[in-house]
Length: 382
Image (cartoon, rainbow, N blue to C red; front, side, top):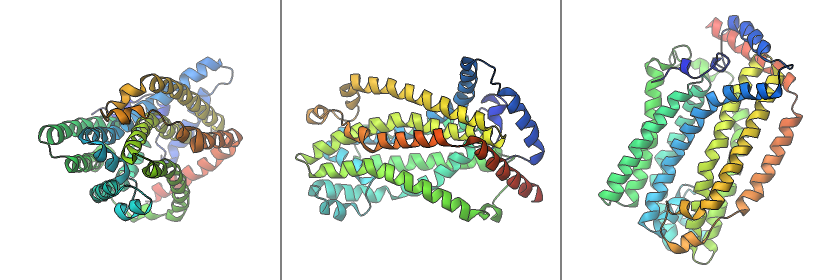
């Protein structure tokens, strides 16, 4: 397994929490690297290298883990239009059968979605464990560990799906159970890595100290949770609403395919989101507000360029991409739904861009320095 030493430059290796004795050398080193008299192209190149050393493995791991959903949905789609519709809806609605019937979904879709939703329950608990583990490792630039683990689990998932669904013909139930197994395999593998010495400086065992500052963390996570819920519900409501259209199964299938492809591509900007968070935290922790702002600008610009490339790719090859999920001609003819892109997502992007440009990064750097020193003092006391 590659070590964090292979990830990149010394700047990229700085953990978010470090003892106070090392804060000043890091601060001075990073400030020396930030030279305004350097050419803009040189600064962009250096920042891009630092960013991609974090973002590259992060994107790879996110694409790999999301691919497990896509592969499961693809196997379900080749079982039939009803199975694909149920698979797409079940992961979004609790108490699926009565709620979907109340919202006007066809009875066969609602009944099968209700059965599938029950088997999705272990998966939801898995997310509650997996996401904190992933962020814990990302904060220490252990991105390659996550990437290699995700690749290993993806290979296992593809093999098991092929064996039990395609060869042994166990149907939709096998698709869902394999998806649950694969995600929990990912969680267990990462936990074994952490518990067995993969993070010797940051993992020393369970401690009640982990609950200190819990109220501040709860306030921050609650706001983030509401933001993510609203963003995800916007897409999920579209799927549920299509059940009221004529030929509901076809409409749900077509939209779910579009959203799966969109979600696949979205793993790239989400990888930039996570990687930029680490880069900004490093710069703010070093008191370099201008460096943090520049990291955000480079990240957003790169993400936009990549997004435009994939937009062209999807517009040109949308029918070929849809063949992965279904061979049903009515489903393939439904095409790309642009409304979900030019609605809430576009508005949200513009608002976040304005907030980023108006942020006073030097003050944020001062706040970050105070927090780092506070936690460093606590670490020394214990």
